[in-house]
Image (cartoon, rainbow, N blue to C red; front, side):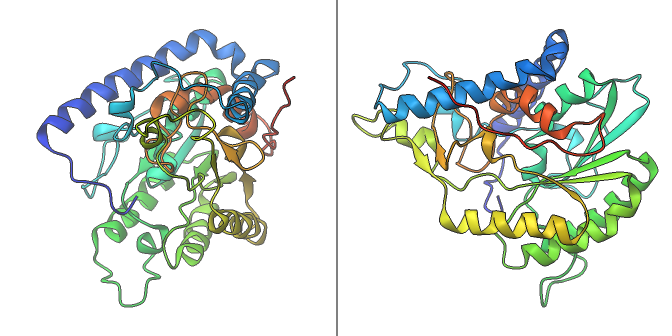
Length: 317
């Protein structure tokens, strides 16, 4: 995430087009909002389990995917002016129900922003407002100035000071924060951010980090690749970081939601699920897949309840 490439003018035009498409996914999801909770939430998990089985059977890769293999490498969730990427400020945009009486804030970097399509479906289904307060390409240790020798006036820290003020004004009922565990002082950074933001909300939900696997689309380009050769396994280092993240949530008395079962089953992570490439780079969820897993994400987040609900893998014949 910290190595994200600079966005050229043509890419910015593509990003704006992607934002319009993302808005379309979010709006069209309202039609199936009734399925965003309950039994239908198992569908993405069933299809994930089938993808794992297809990998074990060494089935061929699909001829076409969403996004296409060529576009998958750069297909990140892009919130445009509603993100502070490369800026100190952003527009504050409601991706949920404009008439909602309760508010959820998605806070953090790209590992939070990537779940906005899924969270938007949950918010609209439950008639909540949803505000992303995000700035990509920053670690939580940079936000909170816990890196030794860090210039306290850096762009990430300056934005974070502004973000805390914005979140306080939004009076969120729930704050959702994604984890990013690849920086040296990430645990201290997340601990500090939680301590500062938790008093601003009734519920604080910490998400696990995403699996650290090679970019799925790269495997598609290897000669004679199959769903079997492209069936990845989580990094042992990431698994250890996940244990620390769960422990951090416990120590800080906030709720925890493991998103791993949305991407992997028994540590096995398919490179294609129901024709969808799940991540751009093995770490950032594609907007299409974020929207695809919305029913299960919604059930796990459990906006209308008091606690998160563990996302449990399902078995298929």
